[in-house]
Image (cartoon, rainbow, N blue to C red):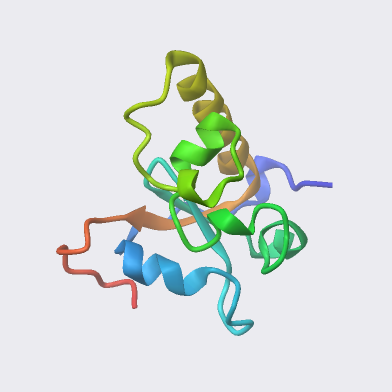
Length: 121
C-alpha cells in the first residue's frame, strides 16, 4: 500500500543536470533510484521492483521520461524529457502521472540544463 501524502518529506529543490540524474538509475545499489517528470525529480527507490534494473519501468530510471509516460510508451527512444510534441490527451496523461508521483514519492530536486552549475553532488 502506498503511503498517504502527509508521510512524504518536504519537497527539495536541488538542481541535477541530466548527466548527474543518470547516476541514479538503479545500477549502483548504494544510490537511490530517481525518475523525473516535467523536470521534477522523484525518489522511487522503495519501488525498485518496478524501476530497478531489469524491471518494467527501468527505462525511466535516472532520466526525465516525460514523453514516454505521456505517450504510455515503454520504448527507450520515448523515455526523453521533451514532451512539447505530445497531443492534448497525452499531456493530460503526463499530468496524471506527475500527480500520481507527487502523491507517492519524495521530490528530491529538479532537472537543470547541462551547462548550469549544480550543487546536488
